Length: 117
Figure 1 (cartoon, one colour):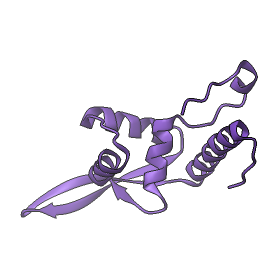
Figure 2 (cartoon, helix red, strand yellow):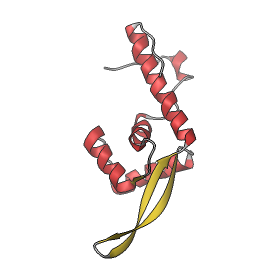
Figure 3 (tube, helix red, strand yellow):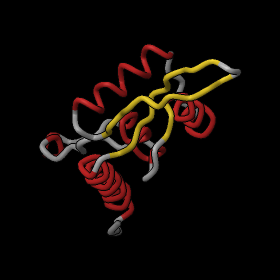
């Protein structure tokens, strides 16, 4: 279903884009590797990003203060590798919640109802 945004609503847009929201929603409350996050976005949300595009997006989420990333040393087939892991911040949780509330309100106002998350 398509929901048009009126000029009046432009001042009240959600803090996150649909893609940023999907990433934060998948992250949940734990720490997830970049590889696992990309696989889950692809499998469950049908979001396909190239490696460079994905890590560029994650860098913007880090710059915005919505996620924190760090490298973890792992051994794979006898080789030591560094893998990037991400977790959502408190600010990211608040932005995810505000975005979810925005879309829930938009959908329910179209249906004539109300909803609180």
